[in-house]
Image (tube, rainbow, N blue to C red; front, top):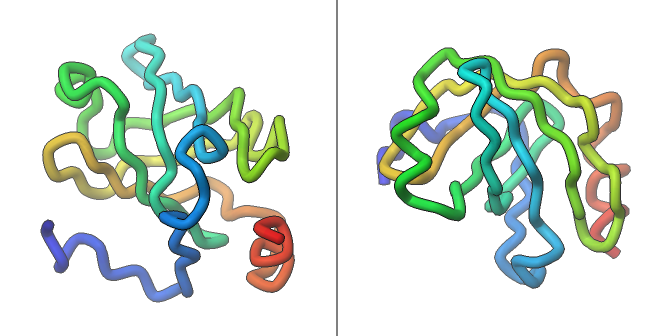
Length: 115
């Protein structure tokens, strides 16, 4: 994995311990394509995710604006709905995005959502 591209300054919450079903979102890219993703980690500033269909990873480019919707996050349906993000790095079917704007949460609130 490209560790240089994955260096965020903000604390990340790793989600590997949560069943992948509870980390699913639908994402629309500026190209008009819709994708199913699994969130790998998240912070108030961005997230790392995997596209569930490897062939779809070619359809997202760096600096693409993404619209996140239809998320299930640890059984919270609607989390991240209407959130925008921009792709900042990619390696195969794994992407890093920056939220635009950042989440309207602080880190303790984000951690509490995992309980």
